Length: 84
Image (tube, rainbow, N blue to C red):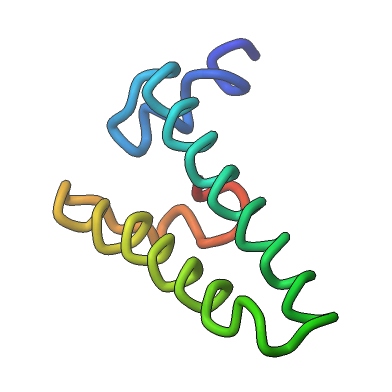
């Protein structure tokens, strides 16, 4: 059960536990900031016009393109929250 909760997924993307934690925290931080920018944009449409879409493109590139060059096929992992 320990391996399933803490080690199996990081291993499936060729990362150690702490390496995966750093990557996931980095993604989460970027998504949090992009989310805040989207909320600002909702109330003041002239602000943060491209912030959300730029963040999504950048994170997609890091998650999908970056991992493909390491030989991973993320379609096996899906692109839901469990792909991080």
